[in-house]
Length: 57
Ligand SMILES: [Zn+2]
Ligand SMILES: [Zn+2]
Ligand SMILES: [Zn+2]
Image (cartoon, rainbow, N blue to C red; front, side, top):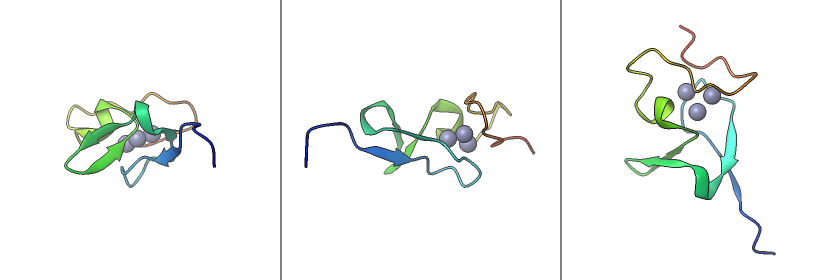
């Protein structure tokens, strides 16, 4: 084990992103890759990460 930052998966069901734990946005005990995912894409915006189609509904 080292002190390198652990990577976690975004809790958004459609999101394929992972991010360092210290960059994750925590919302109600879940970790998200960004504000858009944390808010459930209530404004229709995607997470903005390339290769990820979340919020593309
Ligand atoms: Zn995403
Ligand atoms: Zn996400
Ligand atoms: Zn998302």
